[in-house]
Image (cartoon, rainbow, N blue to C red; front, side, top):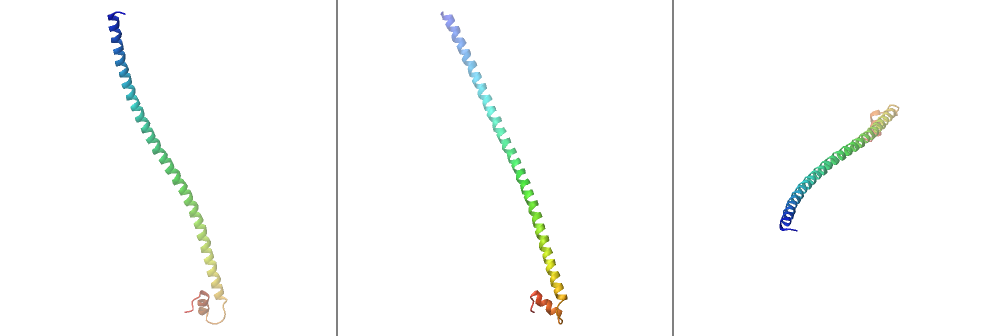
Length: 114
């Protein structure tokens, strides 16, 4: 191998080395960009997961509250009906009451001794 061939080979290796550095620099830049995109996608995914979970929790709470409201309404209606029946019973007892002071009989039924 002559000196000129050797010099040419060294020049080619130098150029290849520079090209390799350029490629490595470009790859590092692309890797950095890919990592940034991945980070953004993860953040977007987390936001979406939070939104979906919030919606599902709200739906479950609303459903539970609707069921609870219905249960309370039924219980209140039953309690009001029971109180109405009791007042009706007291009224009828009063109306059928003994001879004498019906107001006093009513106070006795209601537990008012005054």
